[in-house]
Length: 126
Image 1 (cartoon, rainbow, N blue to C red):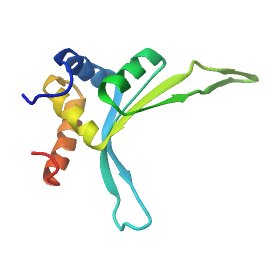
Image 2 (cartoon, helix red, strand yellow):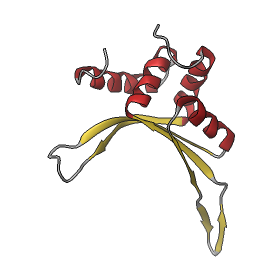
Image 3 (cartoon, rainbow, N blue to C red):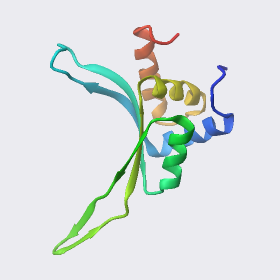
Image 4 (cartoon, rainbow, N blue to C red):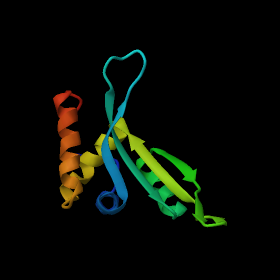
């Protein structure tokens, strides 16, 4: 096992959180000066509990954004609870995925393996 900068309890908790609440994937970005899109690893979680999202940022890094939405039912428009989105990309995302992968058993395991293999083929991780 690699020496991660996080406590094992945090890694195991994060594995469960990723499994239940987060998007994990390879995002594509296209720029004007590149002919082919670039892919980068992304972990993104959205929740109405600001405390959890801020804990993710303080523990694993990344960025946090507040989102508000409006519910529309006929003529009645009301704001829903604000949601907080935490996102981490590239190297930080890969390090988190490498750390949590042994604890992921469900549907996200194949996607995480795909992302890790993509970065291995590129020579960015061992």
